[in-house]
Image 1: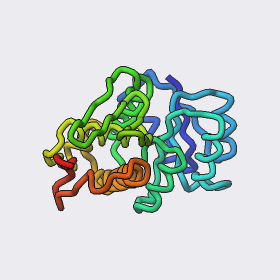
Image 2: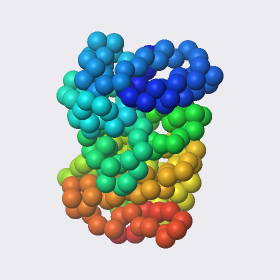
Image 3: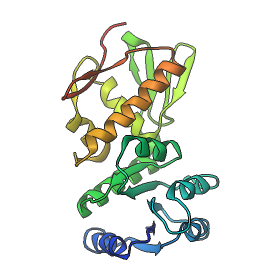
Image 4: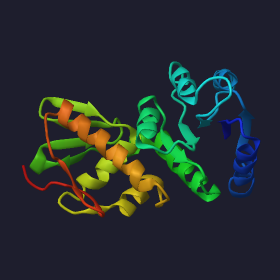
Length: 229
């Protein structure tokens, strides 16, 4: 597989390169330190995955993400020191598949990339899940959620979270369980990232499906899908 890392810090590039050398040696990692060059390489090299830093010397990483999404659906994982909820939301809304805050572990990076690629390449291997008491149906292969005549679409990560909640309706799912369902493990800052995803799912359900308070929080523990109408 061929991965492209767009990162201007040579120490980070070396750190990521060593991670693959030790934990995933079959990966061919190519790199560049400028955003415009990165956009060109995505088009020219057709990588299987892009690792994108936001703080680049020529153009902002968000603009790189936006430009790539004009012509490619390649999986993109952002790596950055910008860990605020606003930055995570901005990255996801512009088309990132994952968001990883620096500093991060090498094994964590590999695990999250493998999970991302597995679901990106095999989205059609799951079947629709029905929540009869709420008249909701979730189709993991398309990310579509329907309720009566209403429908909306979730991203891959949003769909994984909602699947976990819908098959365990009425049961509190902890932050750790949700993180494991999405990334295969819990990691530092995963709770904050999950809150962003949950808020995005709620917004779509309330705006597009005309349903409110479907996902409820259990403060300090996690979330659950309500059991009745």
